[in-house]
Image (cartoon, rainbow, N blue to C red):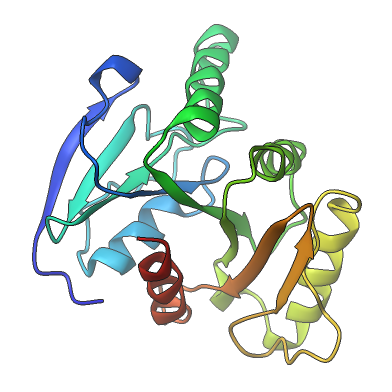
Length: 215
């Protein structure tokens, strides 16, 4: 997708201040420090449009980005081990869950998983919520450049092991040295996945294609 225009439409944690627009929204979710800002900057073809930090929890609002005056990409706060109070973290989680479950213009969710590690407990809980809400979502394994391509099959296998009974990516007969690890149907939800690297740009076109289909 060619980015013709890009603007920060709203940054807030108050649902009353979310944009009142019929435009479709695609949200980007993931644990703190999974690489959300890097994924967004790669999609936007901007270096630092979404702020990048080595410190977890820097995204502390829901950020709505207007793309091409046509739809929103929505940056959700990272969940997990951000250095914030338990009360603040609980408030974030509550708003994120309400957004995912009740936002009428939400057309899909990009769920990020660090390719180097098994899904965390919070990752599993988020995917369970996505399946239960019947939202369309895609699994994006970030930081793919940091693991050898020979390890990708194991990454997907470990993912399936952690998500047994919740969601599954089909690994049979797939070449996991390439982007795209198949689709499996479970509970009426199609779960595609790709490997993504902000360094090499791998997965960028595949992810834009999935987003375009949602909007």
